[in-house]
Structures are given as structure tokens and as C-alpha cells.
Image (cartoon, rainbow, N blue to C red):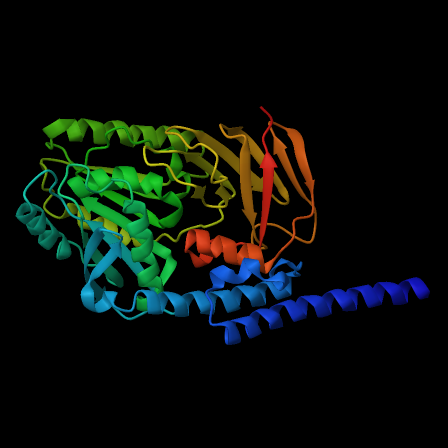
Length: 405
């Protein structure tokens, strides 16, 4: 009897601590006037939460993030410019249809051009603004900040696109799981690179008349992808390369039929201009939603490296080099690392992925390298939200593991 009373007392005490944590968080927001980024420095943010309290903390953080982002990007609707240090991404925005209950779609549509005078790229930008018309959604045609051949996959474009998405989610009512990437000609060059590089951001992507260069497609396991090319688009072997990379996607899907959804369209008799046959891509992409927590991820670093991908990230001080890879999957409460070129990995976990009230196991090549409980905390929620700037990548728990050499 005494043992039962003691257990009940302990449970009640834990529930009170957890409730106090969320209450303290709300009070801190109400009185401090500080950014949610300061939360990890507060003692209450490191208290262990149960699932219910974690969900309440997520809602508080979501509302705070939206409010902060609305203020941060309040001038963009008028200025039509996303600014990052000395870089400026001009945007032309059109909104189509009624806002769905789950939020608008967002189409980021990259124009053609390249190494040419600014007026040439400006003209291509003007064309892109009216090139595609979704039935529903926010259609944004950005003007590349550069006038170079690689203007749609230079370093820092990732950050500009992330800021554009943050603006659209916070100020235009966009659903972060309905963000699509497309581009024509030089914009298609960008899709070949940016779709895999930022695959965890897109619900789907479509490449129109672009050149793939050295881009790999392995990161597209969970990102539906279309290839559109004119049969007679001979310049730089674009047509042959489109066929070749379409076959690569076929092979990837054959080897892993749970992923790599794709279609390849080589338009008969057409050259670089496909006479709008490619507009069918809009409806195809709109069928898909981002899966932010896929069971399996394949992550290969592109020429511009990144620190995180879906539910996986790397310590800041760990070297990231082109072509370094990680392949990992989870099944229930077990994470399996199939391949890692890194010595240290961080897994981010939430209750949609697995049961955080039970132990989590990590295996590398079949060998157990970790087993234990992983705590939910406000600190981890706020840290991941600050790092990713994506409401869907706000995780309550994280697990750092060392991969055997």
C-alpha cells in the first residue's frame, strides 16, 4: 500500500513539474519580450516533458514563431524583396484560388537566362511570372540575385529560399508541406541542383529544359520529381542528358520501390521551347505533399553542403564535404544506420515518428550502438526551430550518437 502511494505521489509530482514548465514558458513569453531563441538559457526549458505537455509547448512555440516571423517579414509584401546581408531576392507574387483549410500551396518558379546583361535576365523573369498558372496557391517568381550561368544554385541561395518560405508561411498563409520548386532553362539548371540539395523542403519539384551538370538525384528518394525536355533541345546535350537522368531515376526506383516517385517527359518534335506542354507539371506536383519524417533518408552532400536533412543533422564543427553520404532509416523505435561517412550524427525525434515513452535503439550495420530513453524538452524544441526555421522540423527530442570507425 505504501509503495502504491509513493508511486502515485511521484507521478503527481512529475505532472506538476511538467505543467509548471509549460506555464513558466507562457509566463516568460508574456513578460520577457525576448525571442524564443533565448529559451534554452532558461532553467525550466530543460525539464523533461511528457507527450501532452510537449504538444502544448509546440503550440506555444508555433504561435510565437508565427508572430515573430510576421513582424520580421512585415515589409516584404510591399517591398517585394527578400534581403540577406548584401543579397537581394526580388519576388513577383500572384495568388490563385481560395485558401484551402490546410493553407495555400507555394510554387517557387525560377526563370531562365544566365551569363547575360541584367536586362536579358529581367526579361526572362518577366516571362516566368506569367508562364505557369496553378488553380490554387501562391505563385512566386523570384529574380536571381546574380547574372551568372549558375545563378540558381550559388551558395547562400539556400538561405534566401528558406527566408522566402518563412515569409510565405507566416505572412501569406502557406502550408510548409505544400512547397513546390520548378524552373525553366537556367531555372531548370537550378532545379537539378536545388531539388536534391534542399529535398527536405519540397513537396515535389519539376525541371524544365535545364542542364544537370554534376548533380546527383539520390537525395530525391522522398521528393517526387519531374523531367521535361524537348526532343530537339540539342544545346549542351540537354536532351540526351534528360533521357540519361530519367533512366537513373528509373534505376533508383527499381532498387527502392518505396521511393523515387518520378516522371520523364521528352516532348516529341520540340526544341528548347516546349510550347507549354510542361505546364502539366503544376497539376502533377499539386497531388503531392511533403513527408517531413520519411522512414528512410538518403543524404549526399552536394557542392554547397548543408548541416541538416529531414530528421538528421551534423555537429557544426564536423567537416562536410561534397559527396559525403548518410543512409538511415527507422522502424518503430529502432534507427538503423546503413552507411555513414561521418563519425558523429544527431537524430531528431518526435512522437509522430516513434514512442518517446519507450527506449530508442540505434544500430550501425546491424550492431547496437545505443539503447535508452530520449527526453522531450522545451530547449530542444526551441533549438531545432531556430536552426531550421520550419514549423515541421521543431523536434522535442534529439539523440547524439558516435558512429564506429
